[in-house]
Length: 48
Image (cartoon, rainbow, N blue to C red; front, side):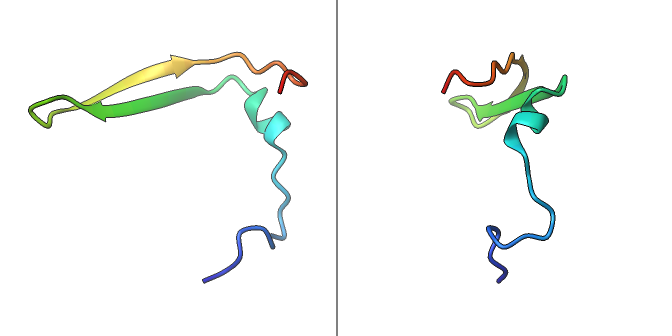
């Protein structure tokens, strides 16, 4: 298995999170039925 930290394509988290993306949160209810909901977010660099 390859080491994900040894990649040829650097991944810039700030660049990725500043894009207008929609995240999805998936859960299951008590009967096991899946539920998927869109989640919008605002990334404010430097607040971590």
